[in-house]
Amino acid sequence: MQPLQGITVVTLEHAIAAPFATRQLADLGARVIKIERPGSGDFARGYDERVRGLSSHFVWTNRSKESLTLDVKHPEAARILERLVLEKADIVVQNLAPGAAARLGLGYEKLSAGKPALIVCDISGYGDDPVHPGPYRDKKAYDLLIQSEAGFVSVTGTPDEPCKAGPSIADIAAGMYAYSNILAALLQRGQTGKGQRIDISMLESLAEWTSYPLYYAFEGAAPPPRTGASHATIYPYGPFPAGDGTTVMLGLQNEREWVSFCDKVLQQPGLASDPRFTANFKRVAERDALRRIIVEAFQHLTGAQVVERLELAQIANARVNSMQDVWAHPQLQARGRWTEVGSPKGSLPAMLPPGSWDVGPRMDPVPALGQHTDAILAELGYGSAEIAALHASKAV
Image (cartoon, rainbow, N blue to C red; front, side, top):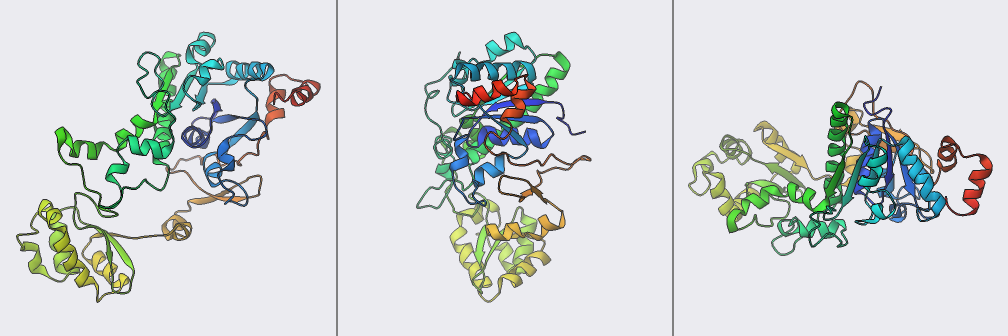
């Protein structure tokens, strides 16, 4: 039995934050019914066509779900949605604009009055607390904007230019906190029998992830400098070129490793006692001088030879892999982390979710838009003539 088998999630979601949270619930066996707009669906379906005509974002965050199309502004569709929640749902997740769910009759106060055990998770950019809404409550919030507001962009990039993260980390952070809070709410409901409302803010989620540079800049101190792929406050820690044009990523964490690095990698044991470099904060201050020494030592070596020396010295190192390298990564292959899922375009490779269980994760297909509409309506007691009429009226 999978951990969340028997749990039903109804979700009004789009883009990344909520779909990522609910996909992980589906991974653990929950039934996830995704409400989508008739004709177009979750707008992430149209972000690109990179996966055999399907969107890369959508394939990533929507496997193992059922797609039910409803025009939630249509009176009959609204009744269907209310019935679905009250008769089937254990959890409701939504990341519509603040206040939109309440206007649709899906606010926690109304739903919990009819179903006290219901867990409702609302995800928004800046939080949607009716008592303390804050001045940013109604601002539009996309991943780049939240990365900027949370200060992440200010400490990421090169000295000359700030950068965003490649993946949508503000969405991912919010999705992870939604997922973990929902699991905690399920545990609490098991003890009390009562559900609750969970209010997840993208800003708060990413600000938590940015707490190290926040504390580094405590009481007006200077923030960590932008240092590209190098570590801002530990050195040497980052990319270094080898003589064959390849790049080697390495990282030192302590003074024991510094001594070993000088002896076995640079083959300059006396450098370890150079007063410019005898503590990490000194090496950070003198990073330019130390980098020149390291680059000069590496210029006569291939990348493979540098890695060989790093391994001998037990210094952490890594390749700077491309996306194609990751598809073929030997460690992921050796651990059997790839499987396949179905989709409207046939079988697709999919990475198993992190973690391992005696019973494997649920890895069901990525749904076509509205694929499960008729089956779910029949489950609610609608007959074939009624379902046909709902389609004709464009309620579904």
